[in-house]
Length: 168
Length: 270
Image (cartoon, rainbow over all chains, first blue to last red):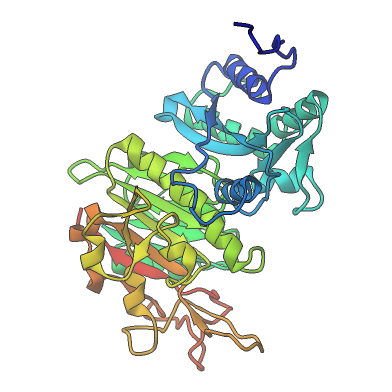
């Protein structure tokens, strides 16, 4: 029998979550592992799809609202991840910095930020933070990681962990 | 264990707080909008010369809430935070360990009722995750929820699932569409309105519009089934005075010179 499937070439693009995980893995080196980071895959939602829904976009919109709250994500943003700072020395205390969501094309990536970071980075509190390319995604990540709020949380973790490296 | 929660409206209420703490022997003080008080100032009043009863629990990420304890703060460790939610593990020697979740939830100026009801699902999910990690549901949630007990976010199974009846809450969980959701018991229902003991609510709001509750019960404490037998409704009070200062004006509404919110006092037998 003929194989009717096309040859499938894997994308050379890194997925946004791969980039996130890579960045998460790099933090420990800057903090003597007193602050690390974790990326969690978010469940779509722990309930069934409501029976009386009409279309997939409607369902996804509803789920996006549920998972991300008031920030509406584009219905295509079916992959969702949360980024946490972690304090291994403090019983693995976790601080949730932001969520991302994206679709099968990887971009755009939709961000939902800690509101303090949102206020720091974006003049309009209601403005969506979206990365349309990998370059934009990296630039937004850099801005989040270098925001005053992120640094405050990291400093607090380091102080609580009773060992403050000079580099932070 | 005696708890006090108060949205301080950014006012310098340190003298009132110290009086309440000493008179009522409060073990854990939790504040929202405490920007009007320097921690050192309140600690000085909480700890008169020669004493060192009270400690400030370290702040890591959630800067919208402050915790002070009448025991070394190492026994109240944060385990998970967002900028509006702090979940802490209380593990005092000789007592039953519990999770204390505190929140200052977004208000109705920044979110519609519908948005609040969706947003609270994230908060409820965070609590469930930490309970799963901890391996128990001895949890209380306290704070300025900026919603009334009867709103969808408070009632809905995917939200806080906070019911008005202890008997229902004791059933622990309910299955909706094949998914089990744990209850919170919401004792604030019993304090709604002017025939209840104490003020009719914790927050008063007037605007010339058709639907208006006047009094709202935005400040609430919710208790999981596993903690219910340790909580007595009589221990829960909305305070409107510290004995010297009335927190309400002559017309009965909260005095904004003190705070637009009234404080909650409650006890758990741990």
